Image (cartoon, rainbow, N blue to C red; front, side, top):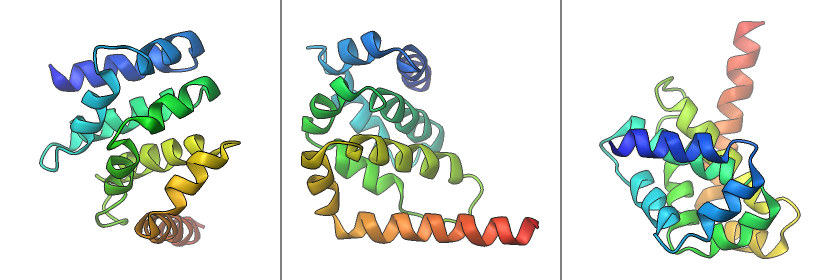
Amino acid sequence: PRVDACKTLANFSDDEQGNSVAIVRSPDGCVEALAAAAAQKEWLQLRTHAARAMANLSQCYAARSPLADVGGVIVSLVALLEGNADDPRLQPMHTHAGRALANLAANHSGNKARIAGFHLCLELLVKVVSFGASESRAQC
């Protein structure tokens, strides 16, 4: 049920600004639940869908501050970047987490500063990008 709930939140927020704002401002703790789901180290599918939901939510500018203001969101997204970058099972999770961080930082100086404060985040992003570049060269 938790995986399905994360999928549903991701689908509701996919290119739907009104839904995204409603979800991040919900008093029911949706964002906190997504951050907690992303922290479940042993459950890859749950973490991937939680990252996808946060990436979709963060596409909407009006949702960026409320999303980043929730304790644990940026930390959980950074943690999702950890792991072996060349493991194909982790690549969707890395992609969604990286997209969420990029969206949170886009045109938002406060979130840029928060994310840049995690030096590990920058190192992990470079690692993921480096793997993607080497994989692209290998396919040519």
